Amino acid sequence: MDVTTETVAPREIEVTIRPDPDQVEDALHKAARKVAQRVRIPGFRPGKAPYALVERTVGKDLLTEEAAEILAPDLYRQAVEGAGYHPYDRPTLRVAHHEPLELKIRVPLEPVVELGDYCSLRVEPEPPVEVSEQQVDQLLQELREQHGSWEPVARPAQMGDQVTLDIQGVADGEPVFDETGTTLVLDETLSPPGFAQAVAGMQPGETKQVELTYPQEQPNEELAGKTVAFTLTLHEVKERKLPELDDEFARSVGDYASLQELKDRLRDGLKAEMEAEARDRLATRVLDQLVQQSKVEYPNLALERRIDRMVERQESRLRQQGFTLETYLQVTHKSMDQLRDELRPQAEENLRRWLVLEQAGKAEKVQVQPEELGSEIERVALAYGEQANAVREALMQPEPASGIVNDIFVRKTLDRLVAIATGKAECAAAAAQGEEAAPAAAGEEAAPAAAGEETAPAAEQPPAEPPSAE
Picture 1 (tube, helix red, strand yellow):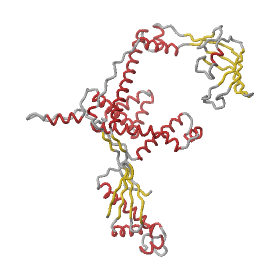
Picture 2 (cartoon, one colour):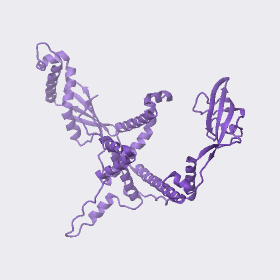
Picture 3 (spheres, rainbow, N blue to C red):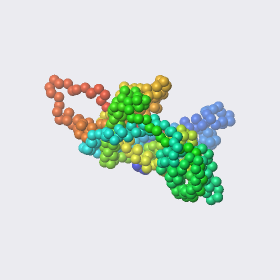
């Protein structure tokens, strides 16, 4: 057997195999028996026709293609796996020449990542989180807004009021609005610009005419850039009445004995949220540095799969909103290829970051323990109250459980990298060197691995399989 290998793309090889003549001859006869099982040859029982007759009946090329399928698995294992290559996914096979038989097997290889000296990563910790009184007051004000009420007033409308009015609008001689009893809150977000200000100052029962122009970037294409002549009739004005900030208000919004307890709980919750954001920022800075210094190579198939997942997530979000991906593409005047091209840069960045993070987790021996998975499933399930048992059972299925394992792995790896980069921990490589430099004293046994010692999960690709014909 003659084998040659060439690199045809990043992390992708093409293996050319020219089997020995006796291998080909044996495979051709096996192929003929298989073909004779499904092709009726008069005068012979299935699979019993002689080779020459089968060849004349179906042709040498078809037998050669069948023989290639028979030979490919063993030849692939010898040529690819035997040479030490690690396939990322199932290879593809094509017959380049029939006589003499020449097979070409295209093999995507596992991504490779060189982290560089990640042990030397250094970042400044985030400053301590401080919650100001103004921030707590803002949260209290938002609570008051949520629990406020609208009450009628006998005065002209003001910005911030809730108004009920009739709206008629004409543009280019055609009616574009005819609404009766519409309720709006007068604020700067109303479109077109100046609408809220036009209503402000009107008295209940008053009718007013005003011309306003919509901006060119208006979402409604029929109104974009148009000037509309509005006729507005105001019926009712209500102002927002907010509850007093006292102990009674605190008890009305939750299980709080006093206003001070409510403030304390708001402060604690805001501090926890700000600390989580600070941890995320720090982890992002560390990962950014690590990705920048790392060398990453991957087959194009890995990127295409990442884009596949992004398309699937977008399709799922659209379904939740009552749309389909096909409808979205029609409305946005895009083809599927254009959508994939738009997603490609983000998919490539996400893939690089995942591969670097995965390799760092392996280097630091990060592992997700079964009890960690169980605790996370329980935490998520309990948030669903009476549906907790159903959610728990669903999350324990292989696919969602695998996703949770990946989430925990990412979190633990990032925590480890942050600890290294802020000088709070040694990287695994440095620790190992230290252990080699300082052997245990005579009679002292090596310490066992700490509980929960971390090792990386399996990579995100299926096991290699024999090649398939294109």
